[in-house]
Length: 359
Image 1 (cartoon, rainbow, N blue to C red):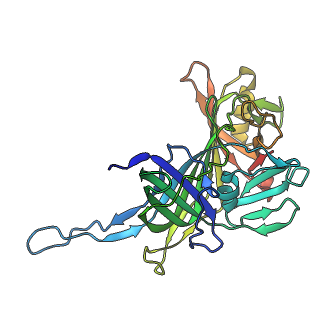
Image 2: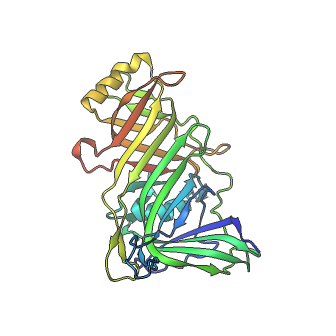
Image 3: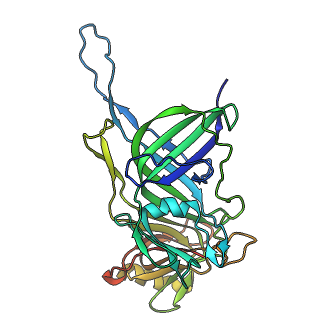
């Protein structure tokens, strides 16, 4: 019997002890991912040498390193309210983003009416709805069930595991007419794949069946220091990448040769292709020439179609200081700016350069 490759289920759970299996539970720790996700790649390599042999035949190679990675493509979605105006936190926020940033459940007017996230993988933090901050767990366990021979409940699946996972980078994709998605690159410690008869029939994909977000009408806006203060970019697509510099760190205390996953302070860059307006050419050129700090925001936060804003569905992005570069693109029907974005701390302050808000 051949195993169907269509069946896939991802689980993720924060680890109280780094590198120790947090044992994600089906139906509780399920992570909604798109089928296009590359998933866990085992990263096993062998020694690429050809030993001399007396008979001329090649001798067996030996395993050199095991450095697993994963790429998860996740659509942004909202979950509504839990009651009393408190926002539900979706799995992509409470696990993946929590491990590499500051999640503040006390944002806005307090008491959970808004949740904000700022990237900070060096000291991830959680602020509860009552305003109490605590250090967050920086690593998580990632499971991937794939293939199936038999039923969801008793059939045999392939299970891949990564322990001690850290987010290497997050790329947010906002393309008109498509779902807003984030591609999350993960690095972790190696655990050998195995067969599994775990019952996955109770999987719960976080209630994400209908509350996906599209950027239509959620225009990207740059605020310039002079001229028309707020400029709607009218972009076809905007992309932000938050790079944490994840890397496997070699050490001889584990059989895989990898002791932990190292990261660095995040670097935040982006691209956009705004329509070029004749009256705004000087704004762009002056900003590029002087490397002026501009403010990036969404003119309208993104809300799932058919839902009301500010009801636990809306997602917004803001960057208080953005520098731009790039050239004019004449390859399309209308002229656009091929813009590279770079988010920095405004005027050298400690202000976080990027905020995601869920309301």
